[in-house]
Amino acid sequence: MTILPHLLLTTVGVQALGLEGRDIALAYGFGYGIDLVDHPIKLALYLRKNGRKNEKNYHWRTPLQEPVALCWIVPLSLYLGTAVPVLFFASHFLLDYLVGYEKRPWYPFSTYSTEGFLTRFSDGAKEIWTCAICGVAILAMGFHQVVALGLL
Image (tube, rainbow, N blue to C red; front, side):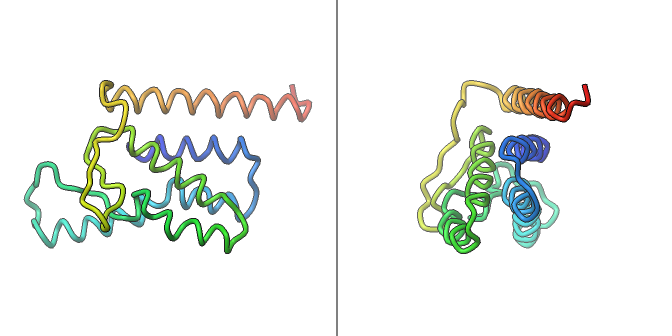
């Protein structure tokens, strides 16, 4: 998915869990920011291989975006004493696995690949629905907070 659903779902999670301080930074880092690290790495590899030539069906993902990354995220979470990195990374790759392009969940340890799930539905429709559901959830939680504060 594009960056917008990742940002919205992370915001929903932060609001729903009532996160504060460091946990907010961890949530956005692992739910949204992982792409800001992963994509420049893969872009450099792509440009070295292809230059500016377009390669159809190029595998854009690195192990930073695959479930295999939990091998370092779980120990990090244990060290930090919070489940936030694991939860928000899981939400990140859940969204990525909704989209119908090739993923390699155990790369670089295995070349097994999958197209994700809900492949009968278009990627555009899944993205629109994800954004709409997250948007409604954000508004509902925000309204609930306004009412709880007695501002309405």
